[in-house]
Image 1 (cartoon, helix red, strand yellow):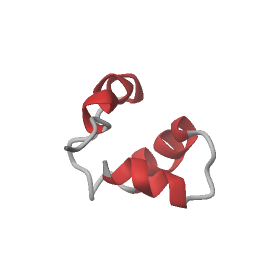
Image 2: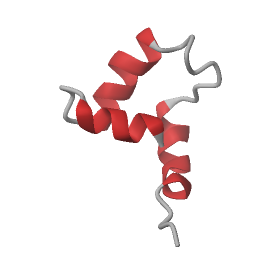
Image 3: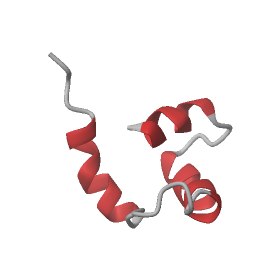
Image 4: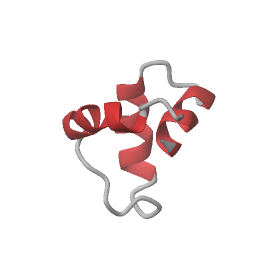
Length: 52
């Protein structure tokens, strides 16, 4: 969820570019369990589930 919010505040427009060019290259230490982009896309619906 943190990365989704952060991507909206970044200069990157497509999320894929933000994830591959910024997160994977520069934030690996902050997020030690990073998954590949394809797996992240599969996991995103569970992060976007509406809160009730």
